Image (cartoon, rainbow, N blue to C red):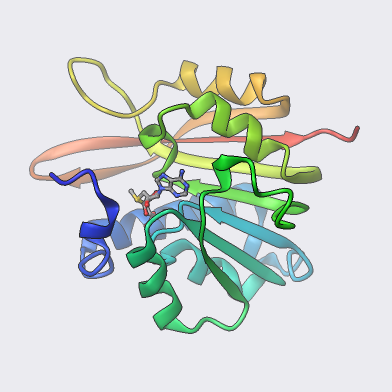
Length: 198
Ligand SMILES: C[S@@+](CC[C@H](N)C(=O)[O-])C[C@H]1O[C@@H](n2cnc3c(N)ncnc32)[C@H](O)[C@@H]1O
């Protein structure tokens, strides 16, 4: 398996597992935050590690703007090719500290779908991203559940601690759904928290 996400960009949307993951993540988010209920039309969203924008595309009809950011230029090129009207696709590394300088702040919702467990400093990333939220804004992540014995992903405790250390409140960490792949059942954790008023 390549560790360069660019190598997966072209075939990403053609992978039914990847599409199903995005479908289930969006359904879990909708159940949590009522995205499709009509109350999000003026909200700004950051899809951090957006890939080809599978989640961005589901969010876009229900919000004012989705900023979709990824460090893979080929993933971003695939997303730009979709020409989604209120999705701003950015090839950038938000974690390098430039986000606030570039105006990438003031979000009502930040999503990270299958991104956090791949980051070298997940707790640091959670803290930085929490700082880009408006008061009352929500951070939500989905990651494979680390079940030990060499499996990759995050434990519920790692997520709970990172979100707490990021200063978020109303933290929820739960198994949101499962994926079946090559005869294996792989649970997916959803972690969420709210930025409190200053
Ligand atoms: C497993 S893919 C998930 C893509 C997309 N969220 C989805 O669910 O289809 C992980 C993505 O995270 C991106 N990524 C990794 N590190 C990143 C970082 N520091 N900032 C932004 N994106 C990053 C990769 O380029 C890749 O597109």
